Image 1 (cartoon, rainbow, N blue to C red):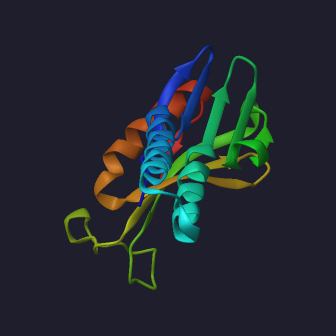
Image 2 (cartoon, rainbow, N blue to C red; image 1 turned 30 degrees about the vertical axis):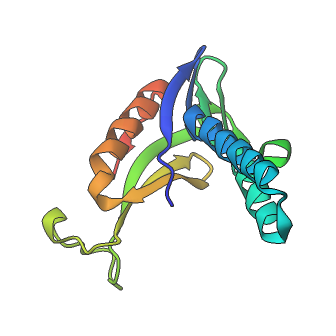
Length: 165
């Protein structure tokens, strides 16, 4: 299952991450499972595992925050209480780019036309820093490349960096 990341403004920062509705739905699923097991007489081992997975899904975080005003960028991935990721200055960002991966091709330098792109190919949003580090912010099926480009433009505008290929 792929969760579509969403972009929103939070104060002076631009936040790109798992939408809030995902956490709400995950908690609702966990609560429905707990209620169903309470009315049916108990969890059992498999039921307990399923409820635990639903609760952990609600605690998962994948978020990138871009704040040009505070000169800060950060990424957080993992469970809320143990999320880790890179922190760097917004002024250290060199550019954003959309990288295309064509499934089943050894030579990624010569890609087929967009209408002939193999099923399973991906478009990836990559952030490059001036120090040479690269961070993949998101990866989507190739058919959603236009959505990823519009998100990349918003982030590039926020940081004042170019969007390249």
